Amino acid sequence: MAKQTATGKRRPRFGTKRGDLSRDKLIAAAIELIDEDGAAALTIRALADAVGVTPMALYNHFSSKRDLLAAVAEHIISGAQFDGQHADWREQIHHCFGVVRDLCLRHPGLPGLLEQDGAAPGTAFGPMEVTLRALQSQGMNELDSVRTFFLLIGYTLSQAAYQARPVPALEPSEKIRTERIAGRGYGAVERVEMPPTWDFDASFAFGISLILNGVEATARKDSRGGDQRPSRRRSARKEGN
Image (spheres, helix red, strand yellow):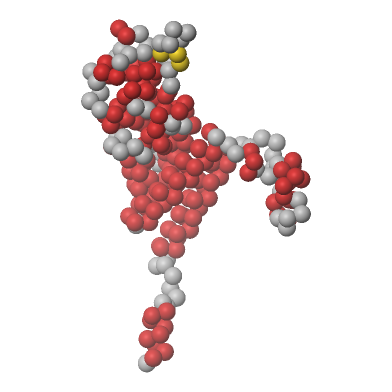
């Protein structure tokens, strides 16, 4: 929210001058607002207060809050290169979700923004397109490819969210193990030795590789014709004959 001066007038949060009120500058201010306070904080009035103008001045650039949200989301996502043009399907997926993660780390309010009605632009489906093409090139069917995409995007968003706002109280540091875990029967947790600093980049790459290893194992199984064991229904029919 805009701060107040000693005279009670609102002081603009961002240094945009009235004569400088371009659509691009308003979008930049809106992005800062979202990254600091979350997508729910972005309204026409909140943005107007932040840049020091009346709400009506913004309607020269955006027809509604929905139009504003869509413009902000499009601005953030449109410049992202989700398709790394890698020949190797694994490298292609690593690249794609690395870009998604970087976007979320630079703009922590982005996932919440895309949840707003009408905000998600067509370009938000870029990662899905890259993923489906890569997985289907390995013989994965459409439904399983979509399931794998949602697994990858869910993992990426949650990892980026935790990196942006970690919860130290849930990490088994030596202090927490001594004070809160010791003697509760959590032997494996007590024995684990956490590194002094957590390498989020390495952790993210490990998680993506783990998922893709599962994709490769599934593709190999499918190429061999799947599970050759008879189903329960077929077995029951044979026993009844």
